Length: 417
Image (cartoon, one colour):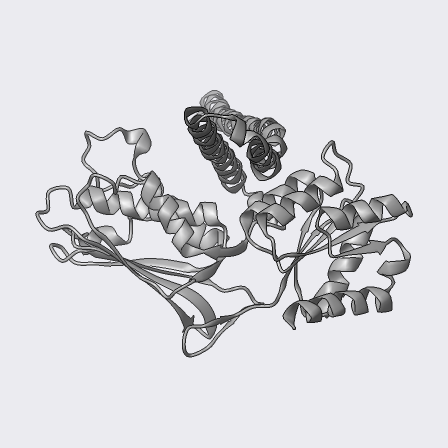
């Protein structure tokens, strides 16, 4: 090869490398654009959803009960038909508000989870009653009308530590897959076994989800959790295939730090075995009973006060969940009953602390409600007590360590007596 041909070859090689680098640069730019678009989409989604949370929560928890109270004062003036229509419409309003709220929350959680930001949220995991999760999953899945019985073996009040919406998605996917797999079977059956167990020295919620379908061959079992892989027939829309079990694995292992695996033999059915850890603040005994710390909800917008009080409460042996604003507070109220709620009376919102106290008292009559405020207005204290608060803490004096600790202990001891 003479010098001319050598230079020509080097130039060709250089052009090839440039094309490769340009391709990589284009791919990197596209990836950056997709990430930026995903971030923008997530932001816009959360902004749109946040505008409906507070009005719907509060309408459901406060204004609708108030409307019913007003109705009770005038019902004797109404004939039977208008009375029935009014009550029926109240039921429908309540039903549709909850459906809208649940749908909006599912969109938010799945968007956060898909983008990887859900794990950083303080309220991403809570105590979850599994029977509620299963009821929701059965309603949303294709179980109804399939002719397939769903037999559940589960301890009473079986509580797990996790995200209810993500766990619901796991069961929806497993149920749908089982129903589709058994479509041609004469005898269909889905079984779910739940228990508290120890796995690798960890206390966990343990599950076995089984069907009596055609089973999965051994050579496919290692691939069913891969994104895009599907055992369904090619005629099925490709965009809807190969994502369900991949998502289940991400939810169980990636988010809940558990484990999921499959056991199956052709013509002998399939069993998915998975577990998720219990909270570090929970223990289980040999009788599968659970022991939990008293749960405290604190609704406080001041970060410094919130952090200080949270630390104090945890030192008292209490499990604390914090809400930074009205929207988060209303959402927590909806989730479960709390042993105690600490409510800042001057939250920056159109919905006041007084209304929050009323909403908690309506939803959970036995919750110990403590109002907090730096306002020395005696009328405000009386207003809070009249609305349903058990006690009133004045900032900053009543938040001093000895005073605050004694007050919380005293209220909890009185309630337990």
